[in-house]
Length: 147
Length: 80
Image 1 (spheres, helix red, strand yellow):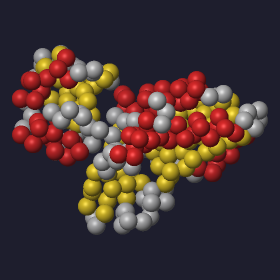
Image 2 (tube, rainbow over the protein chains, first blue to last red):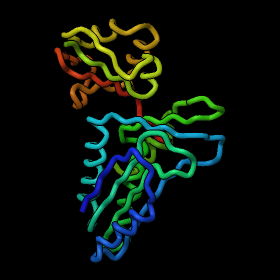
Image 3 (cartoon, rainbow over the protein chains, first blue to last red):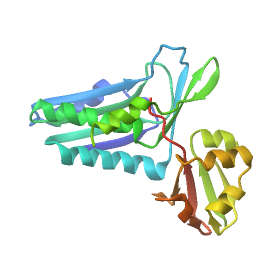
């Protein structure tokens, strides 16, 4: 099973993970990762913009690649866009597999690619001013792990 | 009808809007010529990609947009 969505509204990751888990009774393990807006460093808000013709199709292709690379029962990729406050969930990925190693690897792969290779642009509000977030070197080295 | 130009990320700040129209037909040099100084230089950065009607171009120089096409200017994604 594959579930890929781009969401404009806040969601509760716990409930979504419960439903994902319940729908994969054959999986021996489920790995999930939740990314949220940091409350530190004076961040007042985070805004993610996307480009509809590319962003969701890119997320879908990424989920397909995870399904083809590892033996998974299911995969889920949920990503927010719009304005988020500290503590709000930005991204949730989950992978269900018969054995844990495939689920860990797939979730790690999905996150590295969502961070650095998905069509999202982020800016952060600090001191009441918006600052664009630029790519970091580690984003590229994280991606290189999967070549 | 014209070519619709969509600005993403910081390019939208530089353009002062998320989209604008330029006259068709439009190639890469015509696109740069249609944008003002700082915006044109940001768009000409090698890391900025182009998509026409949702399909990424392998090389900006092959741009050949006609009336009704949508050209997206995509700066590097944020990471973080």
